[in-house]
Length: 164
Image (cartoon, rainbow, N blue to C red; front, top):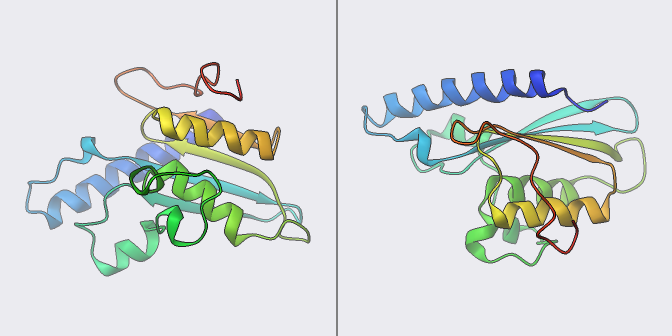
């Protein structure tokens, strides 16, 4: 069952606040967390198990331990399913969805049955297109919860894409 919006809000909110505080401490008070994004993927498998994946848009101030937890390589490092530029491939939603498509088998007990994305910012235009393309490949198998102080958050509007 997809992660609820309330659970996604709590998870992304608490993780983003804690990560921002840690990064600000490491950067000696000069880090602007509001300029970056955190995206979390709750991946559900056919066998009933699940996995949380985290991607952060700027790992330059992270220590090795933090990078091991939050750093997913840009999608062009392991196969790009969406035809993205190198800049677009570094966006958190694109990194996670490409990683999921490359890392998990399409058949078997670890077949992905659903993905819930919780993102600290509403997805940008290029990520909205990636989300739409993923939905075309896997209809009904993706839920997106976007949270943004500026807009109040919401599901990406796919009407301006070829998939909407």
